[in-house]
Length: 247
Length: 247
Image 1 (cartoon, rainbow over the protein chains, first blue to last red):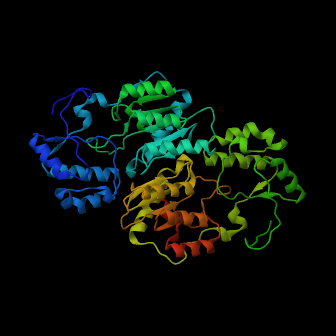
Image 2: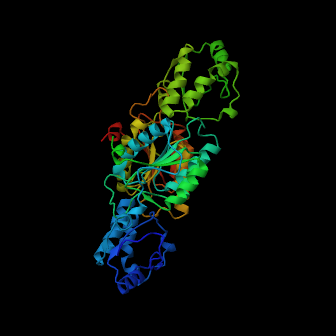
């Protein structure tokens, strides 16, 4: 597989979750040898799966790996692909333009208090890094408002929006920052934190001042649209240097 | 103030949040010199406060301490009471019977996997102990499903109930445990983790196997009712030894 712009046309197929047999057939007929994972981890209920025969045979194993944390799930799924002769390639290797750069997307810049909140968020994420949970938190004026686990970033943002509406969070001058970072031992081939336009929308609804992610190890979906939405909401979207994550 | 059973009649007054002037007047006329804090930290919006004159004068300071984490808020409020001549006494000093004992309330006992989940939860809470956030988490089969911050325990339990309903959490054989522990440097006079009958109800709705708290440093509201509700829901409610919290 060569490099390609995310905007140019690329031959592709859609395969439903649970159709591993179809995947194998199509991949082989197309001469595919490499596999890249991208997107968030979904854990559909088993009743939502429509497994083909091949998937059905793997089902006991899939059930088992579904029960662990995200890392456990992804490395388990990755192992299945590797056992079937595929090479796992990091998405950012194929398309380096989807990786968050240093600095801001859009025009807004973090204020001094935001930078302090970002440092605190990165310190917290560092402290929980070994626990295999979603690596994101929301910090406002030094106070940790939310820590992400199984619910995912979008639902955590929604929760903070609700806490603000119900008055459970004092809406002071500092509005808070969403901080995301990769886990220390995260398999970077299969799972990097990611943000997209919906993350910025969610952050705006949660009344946040901005979003901070680690440059070089965060996937950014549609960076230009992110910039536009961030400008409209007057939110900063910042890529911070890796070192900052490990104080 | 002498010791008293929580069940016998004790002279008391209800004072609304924001009526610090009324509090001072009543406390002085009753000859009160000690103050004990009990219950969870609420951060009502300023518009919900109906401050009397005394509170109004303290408002800038109250606004300031409302913006920090729970510890910061409580020690700030405690300082205000102390400056007005009151002595802060831990609730558990006055009423030792409200402290969680070692072992279970009710009949259900934790299974082996539950004990492993409890150990993992305590390790996580220990790792985030210095960050001044709500010290609770929900763990199932080694996977951390939720970490509590500004939303509080009840809302975290509700979230896990919803994640289960929507199929975002695989409902395996192990159902998960709510683990609560005091922060390492928590001012035990003003803020211990607490559980009550509503915690057990919430845990049941979240489909959990049980609740584990640290014996000796957790306040238990209505332990008998907790036992009854736990038995009905076949949940264990366990007090673990302090040492277990610091592996």
